[in-house]
Length: 320
Image 1 (cartoon, rainbow, N blue to C red):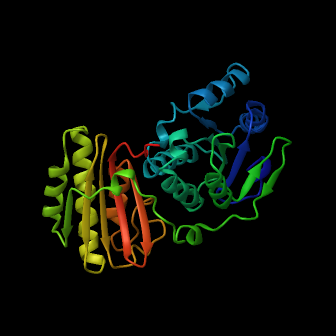
Image 2 (image 1 turned 60 degrees about the vertical axis):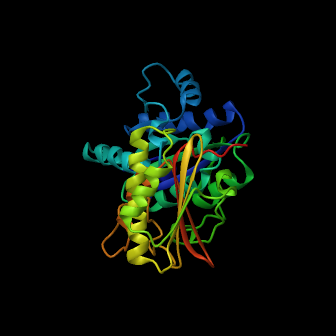
């Protein structure tokens, strides 16, 4: 039987915490975690080091709360979904009737790569809905931008407050609607210069060779190989499922390689493409899912010019 605010709820009970002080954060998180322990439910913290230490110090000794190691789970959205689903499945297999998790994204994820983390926050409303999960996602309003906070409100059905209340968020948008909305793609500064490689309708082999050409030794070999795989999958998808012409552009900087692939089509029909494993009948879904796991950032854009997928290996955080 589920307890607390999620009592009687089936599936995922997803909340946000908009906090502006340590005291605010602890006022929400401590009762949430200790209430879970008291009810015999797994209570898990997925914070970065600072806030994890803050919560750890505030809990009683041997509280029974589990702390995930650092913020490693949030390296990439697809990896986070895969890791959490494995964790949730293990708790359910052990008989858990409800799992409580409080987590936060790394501060870097609130910057230039926020677009794919916003998609993550929306998609998990679907991805975790087959588990008895009650989770709270913490956002520091002193750090997060106005755009980030707007997206958080639209991707979380509820907000948890320090006085113990749990309120619906009126602007919450269902994932299938949110994920299909047109959004601008912020340009990486390196894209303001001419690309070092431009190809029209390249074969996957030509696309792979072009990535190797762009490698100036600035990235670890494994990162380059992962990008080669992602580009090959992306070009194959564009040739099979997109509309000609397909154009590929590559930029190379001191700390990253950026590849943009554009075709005249509309892109994948599956709103969860990239974040979740491809379902049967989802053209190109597997390739995009592989790309999300192989790159440090993936951005998508649908516009009058068609569908563009941008892949970044190396440092995806745009210089100021």
